[in-house]
Image (cartoon, rainbow, N blue to C red; front, side, top):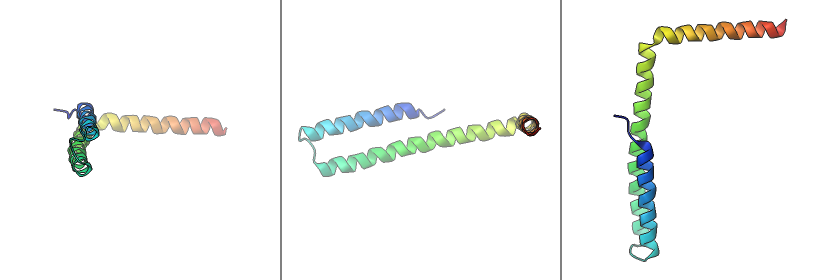
Length: 90
């Protein structure tokens, strides 16, 4: 299952808003806010790393299963580039 980074970021911002409101109302100290923000950032970074790892593994899987297609497209791009370059020079 793909990690839902957008939802995790929305949750992070919502929790930051709650912390700000609690601080503005004098319910929590600044030190407590700092500690909680550090925890929230650590949680979000875990979600970001999971999303990146999932994306990277998906790319690796696609490249291994579509190796011939990728090689063919690379050769086609190289030939097209060379042809365009020779057309510009002459």
